[in-house]
Image 1 (tube, rainbow, N blue to C red):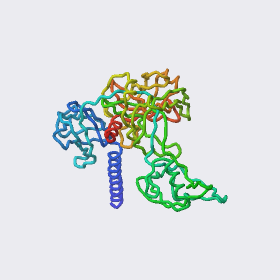
Image 2 (image 1 turned 90 degrees about the horizontal axis):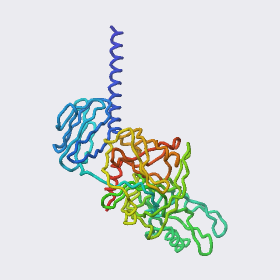
Image 3 (image 1 turned 180 degrees about the vertical axis):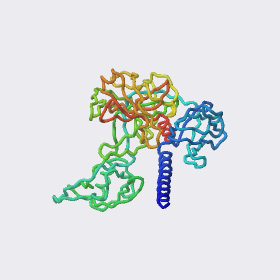
Length: 431
């Protein structure tokens, strides 16, 4: 009898552990793998597969959004089996919520559904020169100084950090390195107060400048107030707004995203291609043509999901393609697709294969895994190279995303961002 009780207790513990594990896994999956946001076109049935490893129930919080499966008519709730596709339909534009329920009672996830008008943009694939002005003077690092008497000084060490942005000197706003240099020299050896932005916090720090010659004083800081590079414009919308790169521009020294809401696009000429090989990404090498005649437009923001702004007539005159509809993440299929890019002076479509589609909330602009299959592009570049970031990805006649990263170990493969993520970021930034 005691032996049976021990067995019963053992199986109860095992069952309890299994139940706790199932709950924990379900919570993790719901939080990280199920998308928090979907975008569907008004009066058009949108097919969605949440790739659930278990059965569940989806229901709409609003009568404006209806749900169905192959086995059921449209209603406000549907039961879905593991990995089953269901449909979303609405005749009303707006922002709504649908919920996901497990075990018949446990609401585990809310998903925002944006019902929008059909969206069309012009895919570009054209390279541009990018100039960004940082929001403040960026600190690259600190250094030692030799004062006028030959002594070694470290005036900023452990006070100012790499990645800080200097906003003010003695409560006077500065925007350039020249402003900083002038104000430090004006203060001579008197203590000065720097107002800096560190992450999202504004703080004041006090530093004593070091005199290094008769008329020159320094803080022992390496700083930068702008950055430049080459990238690819992904699309232009019907109002001239653009999205490019699909990822942000980071400072080459601090590796942090450059905080900027002002910059310019310029014409660029690609001069050479460095082919990518295993372990070393290739690149497009070019020259940025500055000046009014080569000015292409204004940048509104540098974000983790790309750069955004508005192009001018100089740029739109270079566009030769017609508008195409957007394809949302739930429409993307593994299989054949194309990218659009300019690597040798000619805008061309090149064949690729979509290897994987990751709808999770942690894809970090890497929701699409792609492989270059076009023999001509492989011969030219070896695959994806730096400078191709932003190249539009086209599937079934729709713009679905943009190339963002290359696999270091295999330059024929890389990542892409969902186009709807770029569109949503542009909407937030547009004045």
